[in-house]
Image 1 (cartoon, rainbow, N blue to C red):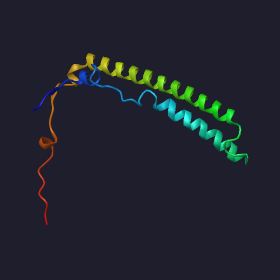
Image 2 (tube, rainbow, N blue to C red; image 1 turned 120 degrees about the vertical axis):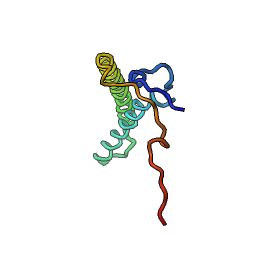
Image 3 (cartoon, one colour; image 1 turned 90 degrees about the vertical axis):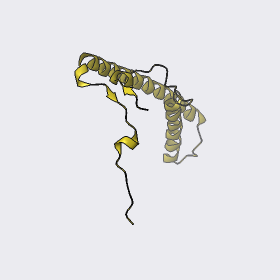
Image 4 (cartoon, one colour; image 1 turned 45 degrees about the horizontal axis):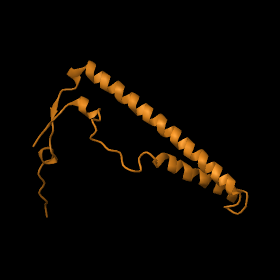
Amino acid sequence: MSAVVDPLELLTNKGTHEPTFLSPIWNPLACGVAGVGVAIFVNWGFRRPVFSGIQKHIAFGVLGVGAGSYFDQKRNEYVAKRDAVLRHYIELHPDDFPVKERKTYGQVLESWVPVR
């Protein structure tokens, strides 16, 4: 049951990869929680009650969500551009990337016999 692997197929998503539920909201959520954590840390540093000035917590949380969304968007743009450059290079140099046949671990690894 070995299939042939084309290098260009590895860099394209033909609808076979579905993102998980948390993948689009993970970075904004994590940065929002980090923003609230920064507000708590600032209050702790100034020896105030950690949840005093709740507007500061809300503001830092909203700023964190915005920063997380921005960084997520920039990362997606970078990854898309990188994949496009790699795909273009493979298209221009097909001799450097021959089509290979897939192997299973059983075909690659040597048999192992325990010595007792």
